[in-house]
Image 1: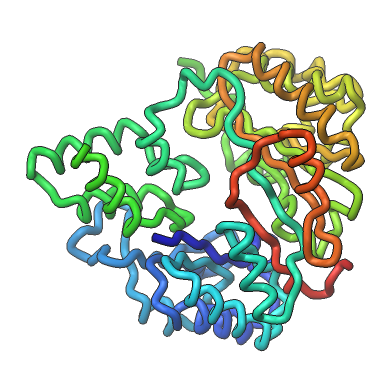
Image 2: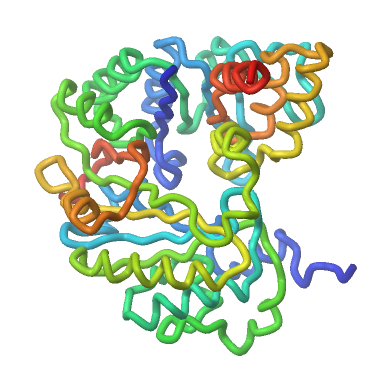
Length: 210
Length: 175
């Protein structure tokens, strides 16, 4: 399964014509993202509208409130945002439209480099700057099991605790909740909304089968 | 437990340092030109993923990098704490040396041909700290590809097949 994040880089997202932000969100929401997020409200008091596929209102808890794709799309004052896709075709379509729209935002894609270069080429643009991961260095014995890390690191800021992943896997094993419900609970913690719950559910199922 | 010395509200009002943990580094490079062709950007994300770190460890990494003459990013919040020539924590902040935080980023850059030497230094200092850090290596593309890749391959520096790509749609564009 693919895992692609497309976002307008912070620093540009609060500037510019509101119509451009509306257009940006229109493009992001068009190609069936598994996650989508935008910011609304004035600077300093902004609120995030967060869509995660299969996160319904019934699963809301505390500060973690879900939004529908439609709510995000219809909002009149969106500012920047991001979306996660599970297939390359969707990302290609998004990039093609972003090139045509010429919004002027700095757009970053997180994904496999060769695939991103291919997408850029097909859209008639060239990658500008890349950021390689040189891995994790230091006292790596402190890290959790790689299989758990594979789930937690889908939140780049690591708001998803390894202990929560272990706890929820245990509950899934005991048949108390489904892998999908567990993955939504994990996705809630990632307030940038990049955690791919769809992929996490599959990883949890694989983990349990072993 | 002692109360924090300053609330987030005070930090914002007094405009201490810079917001966030780091700059937008390569994410807005198409508009800022922070990293130019022929340069490698380096970020050591102390405490990541999910372990946290002690400022004493951040200082060790910063000192090792300062010792080989990298150029630290002045607008990075960790840079505010450091003497950028030596990498040492400034005298007025010495009391934070044994404090812990979830993460902080040391951001710097250097001529691209120095990448292998810098990587060796980072690997060495990594043995001396009691936490982990994620390493980022940044490069502006030339004709649509990063020259850094060949240097990494030739020097057997392992990198992941995935990462972030700024696709150059920012305007006005910095070539």
